[in-house]
Length: 346
Ligand code: KG4
Ligand code: ZN
Image 1 (cartoon, rainbow, N blue to C red):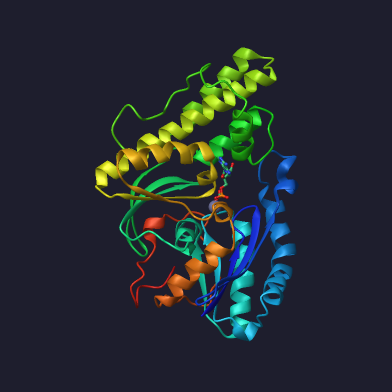
Image 2 (image 1 turned 180 degrees about the vertical axis):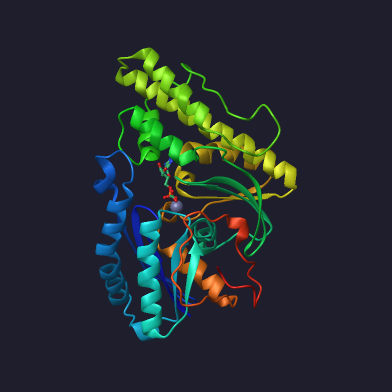
C-alpha cells in the first residue's frame, strides 16, 4: 500500500508518500517561517494562501521524484485537525479531491497522532503500552497509550502550550519566530546560576501543566533589567528554558510512576530541544525506563507523519465519507481505536 500524506495544519506544507514495503519514498517540506517572521507569529490567512500555492506543485514533485504515478497511490491522508481552520481546509480539500479523482479512499488524520506515530517510522519502535508526552506549538499533553488509537489523557496544559511559551518569550527577548530553537541557541551563552525561575504546578499533585505564569515571570524579569544587555537576555533565556524543561521532566517522571509504565515517547516540535533530551536521559536512568523520540527531522511538522498515520489507520479498516470536514479543535481521546471495523472518523 502506498499512502500520500498532506500536512497543512499550520505554517508548514508537508507532502510525503509512505510505501508499506519501502518506507518513505518521498518526503517534502516547505516552511512558511520567512513569510510570518516579520509578524512574530503565524498569520492564519497568509498561511492558508501559501498552502494553496504550494500543496499541488509539491504533490506533483513527490510523485515525480519517487517515480510514482497517481495510479500507484492507494489512499490519501490529510491533516484534519487540530490546527488553523483555513490552513486545514486547504489540505482537506486537495486531499479529498485527489482521492475522488483517483478513485481511492481519503482519511483525515489527527495532527498530534501523526506526531506520536512518527516514532513508529524508526527501525526499533516502542511497544504499547507507553506514556506519550506531546509537546508542540499548540499542545502540551501527557497520554497513556494503551494500544493503536487508544489514548487516555493524563494531563495537559491549562493555558499556553510549551512551544507557545517558547515562541512568546522569544518575542519578548527580540528573537525570531519560531522561538524554541532561537531560545535554545541564546541559552548556550547564558549563566544558569543567575536566575531561578518557577517550575509551575510541580509542588502539588497532578499531571497538568501551566506556562502562562512562567511567561509573566520572564516578562517581569526582562522589564526589571531594562535595557537588558545581550548577557542579560542570554541569562534569561537559559533560566526560562531550564524552568520549562525541568517542569516537563518532573511531570514525565510522575506520569511514569503513576501509570507504572516504563516506556515514554516524546514527540512534537519541542521534543527537538537538546536540553530536554538531556534532562530526560536522567529520568531514563533513574527509573530504568526507555525513552523514544521520532527521527530528528520528523519532530517538527512534516507530511511523513501524516502519510504514516494514514497508512496505520487505513490499514486497520478505517474509512470516511466524501464530505470535507476539518476539526480545528479535536481531543485526541475522541479518536476511534484501530481495531478493524471501528466507527469512521467524524
Ligand atoms: O510540532 P510543531 O512543529 O508544530 C505544531 O504542531 O505546533 O511545533 C512547533 C513548536 C514551536 O513552538 C517551536 O518554537 C517549538 O516547537 N520548537 C522548539 C524547538 N524546535 C521547535 N522548542 C524548543 N526547543 C527546540 N529546539
Ligand atoms: Zn505539529
